[in-house]
Amino acid sequence: MMAIKHILLAIFLTSVAYVRCDELRFLVVGDWGGMPLFPYTTPYETAVSIAMGKVAQELGTQFTVALGDNFYITGVKNVDDKRFKETFEDVFTAESLMTPWFFCAGNHDHYGNASAQIAYSSRSERWNFPDFYYTKSWKIPGSDLELQLVLIDTVLLCGNTGHDHTHTQPEGPESIEVAEAQWDWLESTLRSSTAHYLIVGGHFPVWSIAEHGPTQCLVDRLRPLLEKYHVTAYISGHDHNLQHLKEQNSSVEYFVIGAGDFLWKSTPNKDKVPQGSSLFFWAEYLRLGGFAVVRASVEKLTVEFVDSFQSSLYKRILYPRSEMKVAV
Image 1 (cartoon, rainbow, N blue to C red):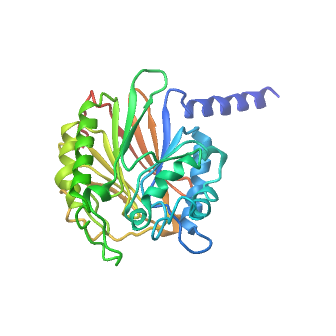
Image 2: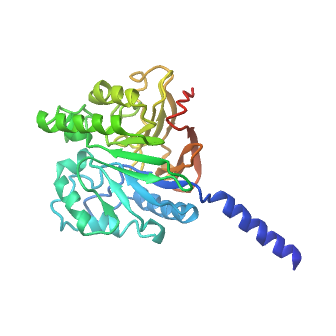
Image 3: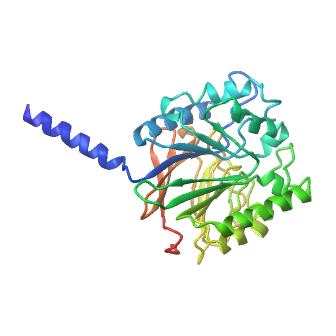
């Protein structure tokens, strides 16, 4: 009997040590938006949603970030569109995922009525999409330090891509005035940030070796801002895989997290990123998609890629902005 008690106590202490109470923990998923035909999801999205629920339950995550292409193939029509239920509410059903979700729009969302996704925030307690671009901060438990998330709309900044699946670059913003207003807001937001960790997220990647490759508009205008204001990381989707890229002699880390609904393992743009910057790439079809887990403590921020079998694929440790450690 005593042996059993010791075993149970060891298991309990191990679980307590694993789920630290002094961490902010959240999930990140991109390109998760199902399909417009029955059953309105894909085997990848279904598998990813189940895995996310289990990981969220195990870690006690506080929220989820969704990086666009929320509804394939042409977004939603209006706030009453059944796709909200068929592709989101009826798929991500785990009790552990009934925490706040924070969204930005992707190119497929802008093919439809992206404003309707913003309006849906008033229909769902967990759907948080207050505007096309916005910022949100959380306290790191046990401290007064903050993690700040800045979500932007890369389609409004750079323009949309064509419908022809030729993996074209964005065609330029529909409205220069709207784009410049967002650029001004973004720089002002980054300039004023005193966050311990500062994460910027959007749909189009800055750097990617996969089918869409780098987004030249963001390389030209977003990348300098990330560097200037010591952003911790830029997270994106668009390419249907998991990637980590980092330029040498730079403190900014780039993560592509677009494996929520499809996978594509082609890397035609591997020569279009800075030499040595591609540190991790994953798109294993039989593993049915993946997502990221982010854990922020006072000492460090950890980004971990996880597949639909809940297997850890890759882990990266980042440091507070004040330390400005440039890891290679």
